Length: 184
Image 1: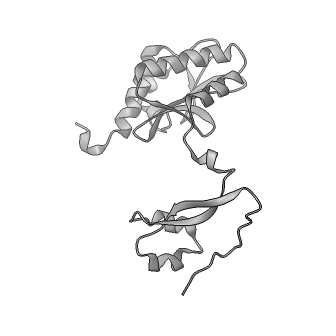
Image 2 (image 1 turned 90 degrees about the horizontal axis):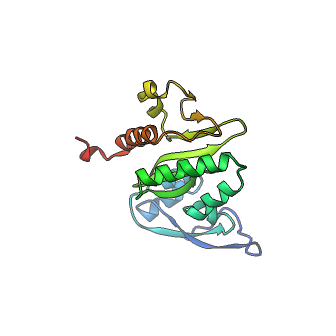
Image 3 (image 1 turned 135 degrees about the vertical axis):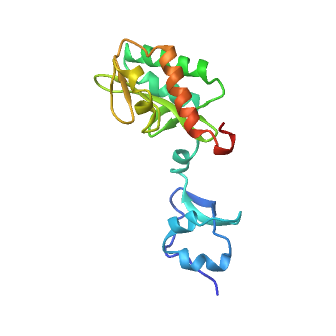
């Protein structure tokens, strides 16, 4: 029996067919058709199903580049921009192999698929984002002069974070995301 989509794709819009993963045992696909997220969570094979996807959304799903971080910084007013550019360079110096990406709409650095550091500009402060709720708690003594939330370290607009502090923050995050089998 041939299965049909539960909706009719409108090919007059900017749509096309794109590969999407399918759970093992293609015969089981029917039980997931109403809950596509469940199907994606139950992947165990490399099978693909071609479904219509809005091509306007595809750029949101692709990795972002250094140019997009440059664009983000270009929209930030001085002196915030200069301070964030110094922080960006500090992070690059500490982890030169990290991939520069946009995560949650903010510049970030990713290693081995995990975001290890990020930053953002706000109205009254700048923020360093470790992308972990426990890094800042782990380094509480080193952060005594800064305001923070569970997931962000706030610092003044005109003063970049010291390189030694950024190095400690990144080292703590890398320890968290390091694969378990390679931990000492």
